[in-house]
Length: 246
Length: 246
Image (cartoon, chains in turn yellow, blue):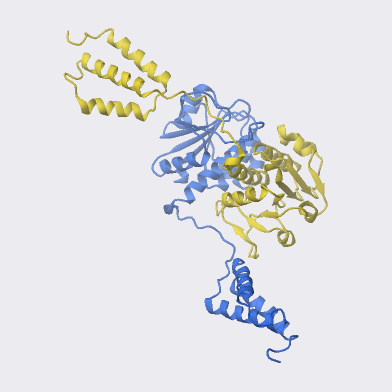
């Protein structure tokens, strides 16, 4: 699915932007890069800024026209910072664009086209697109660097893909501590209440105070390990407290 | 609200990343940049890559420790590519993080902290954070360039802010053409049906075929201008067709 999504850069001026775009692509699972008439390519700057995405730069297809880059694509979205009143369907939000693009990419090649750093895409190039998308930005300064625009749209594409059940993507979570069982929580509550009584904080069982403190700890969602820690602390405190009833 | 959101870069190695991060911030409405012990700053590379965001670079506060950068913040989110099993609440998704951060920024300063290019944040620095966030990425190559990470999280923050009614953000749309009235659509349908009959395509009124073609045009959501165009085309065609009934 993601391999069906082509990133096309038209007449990129700075080779560094090609490398940084390749890196942005790779971090988001994309690998089909096509360059239309890049000003200066290959170039050491492209390789340098690609960091670990050199393979995308090396395998990038270089063509002479946008048409060649897109011939087999069933949907072509032109990324345009400068909105024009061209009658092309326009996505207000990159996430809506990404969901549709990924949907189509399930069965066909599709493309996301980026223009020149200074002037974007020409009207003729936009006519080769089926849709436009722009990245909502600060009205006073809204032009993202080319490779940053690639990163943002690639990020939304990857997110749209991740959110599809068939993608099989598993988030990498920090080692999650197991939640305690109801029994373990019950023992902790009993222990806490006992310490509250033994310390003289409560002279008799006081359901409301006990419930409030239990709720506070519950909000912290302690793991088993943390509950253990707390019980260890309570036990150390108890050593110094008179036993109940004495 | 957005001015309450501070971006903190810790011990950035490449001054170019500082500049590119400043640009990323400004495109997304952020302007509070703090640098903790940058390796090389000020630097022409920072200014060059800032493009139109030079003011953010010039006004950036430089401090000696992360604590100094954060003293007044009520929420601090550490951006970490490398997930650790530290018991810090963790946002799986940048958009969830952004909504919460923007919510808090309505009333208090908050911060988003980014670490070193190679090694991220130290455990001590993470302890100064109230939350962690990571950007879901390609499991095989998931480390975004520092300024790209700033761009993506700033983009989510700006999106969260835009989506709040009180932000007053108005999307910049292409000049929207007015939709036609029901009457105008009716006239178009009549004209189209007449041309279908006059051309011999329909030998008699055929409700289903007419309805199908009307539905197709309806899906295109023609503007008044476009409807005019179509009617002009139909009129030109009619010149060459025998009048109905003759």
